[in-house]
Image 1: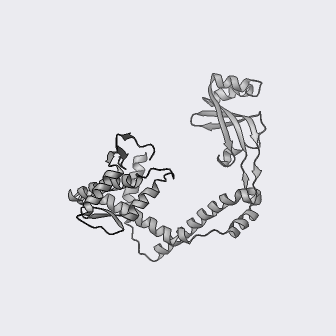
Image 2: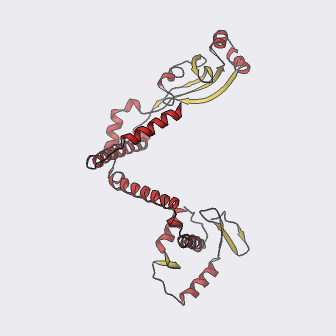
Image 3: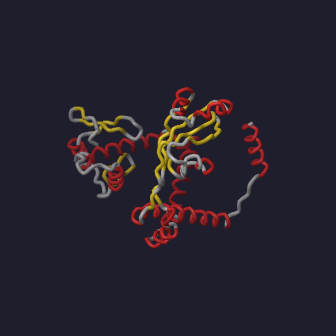
Length: 295
């Protein structure tokens, strides 16, 4: 909230849509609230009523919490956020009155959002909330894979890109001479690649980078843009991690794997008890159209 521009005694907020919204200062908002209270008394769990819609105290607190404000945030935050919620409610109410919810395109988006929220809620209750990784699980995995759990090694490399195989055959012998690789990079194309970590390149390419002594030129790798050669400037070996160093990563990995397994089992159970009919003719027509479009 500290980044909010202030003009005189009136501050401005950006609404979720990006439109600047005038926020009444706390004293004025309080006065208006007291004035409104003379005509209508609201329940303790309701902080405002906009037409027929109520804004609950819980909604206001949730909105404030989601902003992750520092402890030093100004005391006017609740009134500023409430004003934004009032604006949003006014817009929503106006949209309803315009009948926008009945427009086919809008109705589909609402249904899509509804289905997404329901899916997320179901997966959370049937999968996420049921997965619990214990310290024993983590220790068992660590003991079994101790030699595989390490800070990955890396290489620092430069690359040279030659236009074709004919050119590569002509200059490859010069790359191993002193200064030859650098001269070729200046003449053709290439430069520093930076650090390449173990496990980040396809296995068929790993042999060109790891286990190769520093200073050696390696290649070729034929790619769409040309013939690639690399010079290994630095080779750093990986180091094994202790249990404490690896614990957080193993917990995250096991949690993700267990959730995926449980999700697939749950999905299989739904498929097993639900009749699913596929129109093979329509599917075949679509697949044929897709295949034709790719040619």
